[in-house]
Image (cartoon, rainbow, N blue to C red; front, side, top):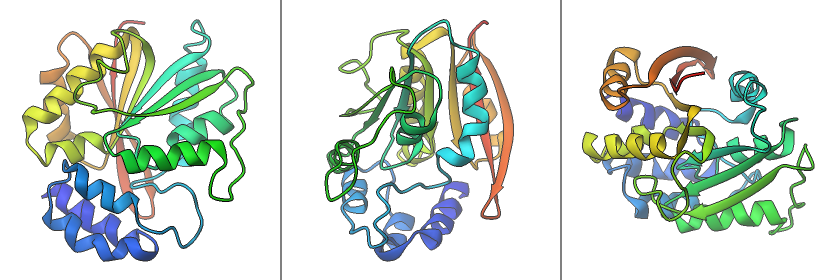
Amino acid sequence: MAVLRRTLRLATLAAGTRRALAGSLASSCLADRCLWDKLHAQPRLDRVPTFDWFFGYEEAQGLLLPLLQGAQDACPLRVLDVGCGTSSLCTGLYTKCPYAVDVLGVDFSPVAVAHMNSVLEGGQGQTALCPANPASRLHFMQADAQNLEPVASSGSFQLVLDKGTWDAVARGGLPGAYQLLSECLRVLSPQGTLIQFSDEDPDVRLPCLEQGSQGWMVTVQEIGPFRGITYFAYLVQGSH
């Protein structure tokens, strides 16, 4: 029910023609790729190249930048955003983060990946993105976050981001969500951090994360409110 309420809330906040999909989102399985292909294919009437459910890079940077600053042993820092969609998280890290980052955004929607590659390269009349740090890199690839083997080796990322992806996958059943978590932890370095951004209550999410992340430290931070909604950052971390 929490996910359904969130979907209805976010559909109401969405701009332009995305409002027309509110009913579809509320009644559909959010783990269905066809649904997201349809959503990401909608015209962007406001010409803003990215679209964020929950919130974007500007709201998340207060949490992300200290973590990146504390992980400077790896240069550039490797960051993975699972289920990136057309969010501004990846592009914000690339264009605004002062630290050298190698960012990979993956999504199972080819429509979302094609759009973000176009944004990166300056397609559709946009200006190509420039990195805040000359050593930073940004890539987008189509991949299923429940099977990252084709794009990510074990222990290869210092930071893994999941902004609402667990929430969407869990609509198709918790086994899929646990598989997503397992893959995120597989590709995370032993000293790295996985962050799940969600508005799901800690009483619901923490037991799931603790069950699926044995041997890792699980904590939660409240962030926001943004547009009147309080969110949570669930951090799964190795030893430091």
